Amino acid sequence: MKWVATSEEMPKVGRRVLCAMYADTEYGFPVCGVFDGEYWIIDDVQQLVDKKGCSIGAR
Image (cartoon, rainbow, N blue to C red):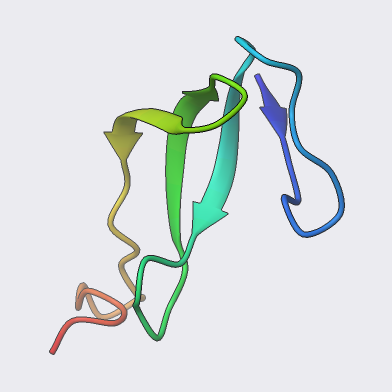
């Protein structure tokens, strides 16, 4: 798996990658998925947690 900075490059079609998504959120959240050339197919979303055990970006 490769980390992709989508602001700089898009992954090869069909390659599973780890990237940070910003879906109308203040904070990015790491996801794993495949880019099909037009859409992202996300199969794993991680929740960021700080050292105190609180979710980062939670309201």
